[in-house]
Picture 1 (cartoon, helix red, strand yellow):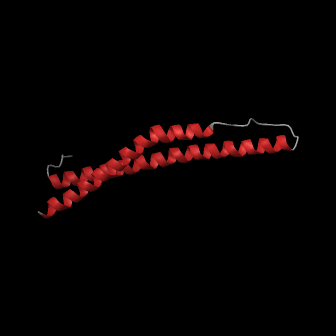
Picture 2 (cartoon, rainbow, N blue to C red):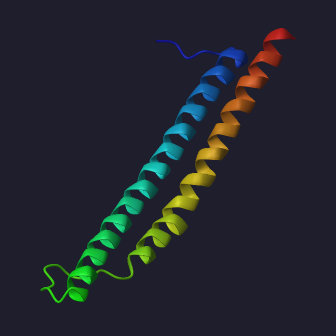
Picture 3 (cartoon, rainbow, N blue to C red):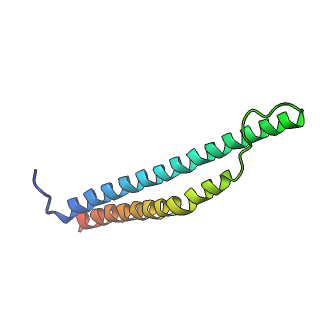
Length: 107
């Protein structure tokens, strides 16, 4: 396999790779955030059920969970911001490279 020397082809390849990688990073970010949202909802529902049992003078069978939103905020603030910025930057670079390849191809 030979490495393409034509700048138009190189820009198209870099554009496609950058846009694809940016999309994957953004999808991963959404997956991680949704995973923690689901965890928070499950813990919330479990806690409500246990509080209902306590209010009905029944034995509590599982723990009441608190502080779950701190984990969601932690994931959002650390990993989420890095993936968001990197993903959108790569998408932008990919689109600019693709646009430049069309411009250079017509010159």
